[in-house]
Image (cartoon, rainbow, N blue to C red):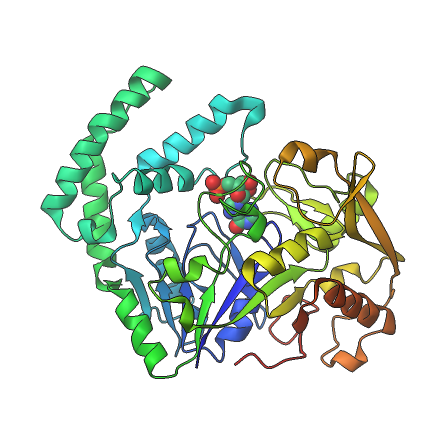
Length: 427
Ligand code: IMP
């Protein structure tokens, strides 16, 4: 059974947690392949809401093996907190595996993230300040510390000492702040190691085992296409690769193992952090969507910027991810709107743009060209069959999927597992 990759097709927060959780019911393995605890997944099981940042939401199913792949940057403190939280909720966490090649987020990464954001002032990226960027910087600069090093106390001590010598110089001489004490960080991480070592392993081997046994394997992307370091709205992006292609890199499998790619598309658009957003709604309509959709960050609590659906973005996401299917989320958030706009192209200096521009200067000046749809003004939250959706809602879904040339497979009309309409079977 070839693997399935689920990715965010907009700026993140599309509801990947809910869709992954829904698909995880039939998955034998769920893998995270990039990002870190900058992500936030909310999953509702019965009347209970679970919020996870790092551990794949598949952990909520007792038979599902969950992997934190080599492409993820891991803050061990967060892993331990999530493990404790899940265990308190009666969830068995024995099925978690963490790649021995995954890089560690260290306290100096978090401090550096904060200091850099402060230094940039009005030009800040609006990061989650979880140390993600600095951890990936160290990885690429070949001074990162990996899980495998955490398991070897002597090696860990050498690497930490070397890094602190360099980092502390920067903290003290460039930023004028105190650096970190070796002993303190070493002891802290030694304690973390004792708690998480049983989960650390060669996850690429585990994944291959599952794939060769024809098991259902699901890759769960974090963030979204437009936050991709290569393909997103650079520099207002994250430091990893949320697109589907990165699943191979961040998990240790070849592209021939991937069978289907599903793009999660929220029925409108949101964005957190800075950077241009052509369909942003700054007035009452934006506020209504924010309230109806509870659009506040799971990780930072920040209100999300809200706007209409943007098909320029989605056509781009369909192309760079090779989307086979859409999973449309939060359709119900539009239930009360009389009219719904969808951006089909941009106007830039009198010209029509069909393709998403690379230049942020251009993007910031793009004016959306809208097509208006009739709202359905009906509560859809109890609907479980596609044919029971109001005609206007079906028109919205069908027109949008035709315009981006990707079929819908799932439609979410609420946060619960039961509030999911299936139009194509994935597993
Ligand atoms: P970082 O990933 O913390 O470095 O933040 C870089 C950018 O990505 C900022 O605009 C963040 O708001 C955004 N970002 C990071 N993680 C998420 C996410 O899970 N959802 C939405 N935006 C995110």
